[in-house]
Length: 194
Ligand code: GDP
Image (cartoon, rainbow, N blue to C red; front, side):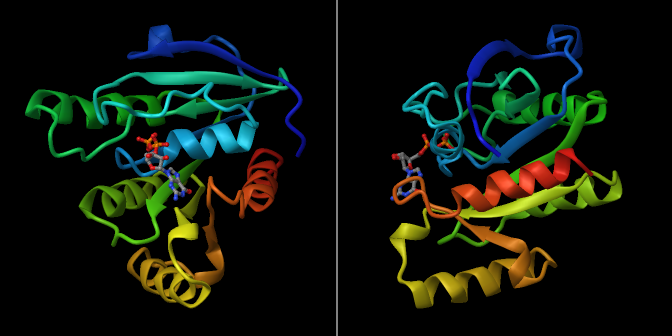
């Protein structure tokens, strides 16, 4: 898949604020600071269209981007940042669940995990919810450049078993080296033509 054009469309909190378009949509979710903004920027080849988090966990908005006029990327708010207030943390789940349950053109989700960290309750819950609701998702392990090749394989095996996936089903990614970019775009193309 070639990315020719990208536009920021809008930020939203609730369904009546979501863009009205019905093009296929792919959402990106991950813990705050996991590297979600860096990943989306790498995929769309823009340096900083998606704001990298200077204050992790503070942006509790759903951001919509239109790609090539026929695909939508959605940057979901990061979760699990310890320093945000309980109120912000409590708002995350209903906002994201409402989005996931009320977006007919949503065709899949990219679940981003730091390759060095074990999946936590939030990742496992989200994966379980997606499976129960028949929503396809990719598991992407980011910041792969921080580990050696051998460690990358070990971590991929450990995380995939914790997420009940085959090792071949998790994708290694780095915003620094851009490894994994083409694979993710191909997998996204598969999700939207399903
Ligand atoms: P977000 O909160 O999930 O959007 O995370 P950001 O994209 O803002 O990244 C958080 C921090 O991790 C920043 O300091 C990034 O430079 C760094 N980072 C993100 N992706 C990578 C990566 O693939 N490799 C390395 N080495 N650092 C990364």
